[in-house]
Length: 265
Image 1: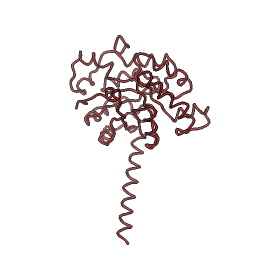
Image 2: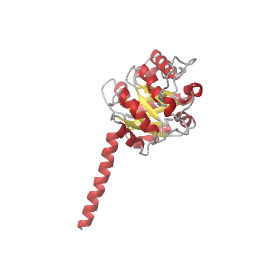
Image 3: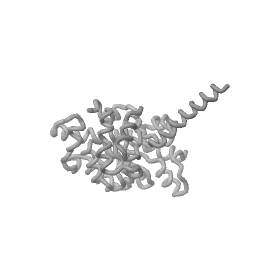
Image 4: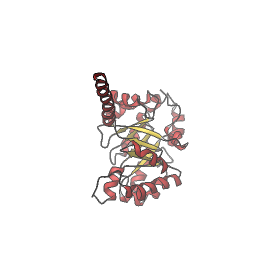
């Protein structure tokens, strides 16, 4: 199924989108997650269980619902960035982009010449994206596919403007958990850290907006999303499918117990 409007176009137009986060490497589970209310689905290869095989088979399960697929690659696996795009992903998140060299290598894998050095071979992407012709894909791919560099260390924060300035980097993605460890010098894991939010995360959102690029972030609590939106983050990942199942099961069991209690009165 062809997605009518690209993730890139929606984000550039100012929409706020929410992506599911998939860690379970099973296409049926990915399909079930894609059929929920989320706007997109991210397949996590870094800390989740996804590998090349599950990404290859999971992406069509997402595209079939008319939603974009995003892939977070493992640290330094820029070759997988190109493969994720060839499989039909619209965006790739690269963790631990701590230097300009990291950013340039990532962008090079994501973009065709002259912006980068991506090798031609969208064997699966073309038919999965609705059979778009090769030349049309070549002409549109650099703009339609998005490279998100993760900002999660003090080193990356110090050069965030330079990272945003790299041609081929379309946005930044903040990982608050890792960032909190770096922010506190390894003393705390606190993705809600107030000082980090105001002194670290807020400036990242502002700098991305100033550069005309996208800002994305992972939220450990949906209640954070309003504040993130105020700070310019218009792509927000919310927890993962295990949290979705736990929350849904609790809601249903609580309702069932309430019903039983009411019937017994």
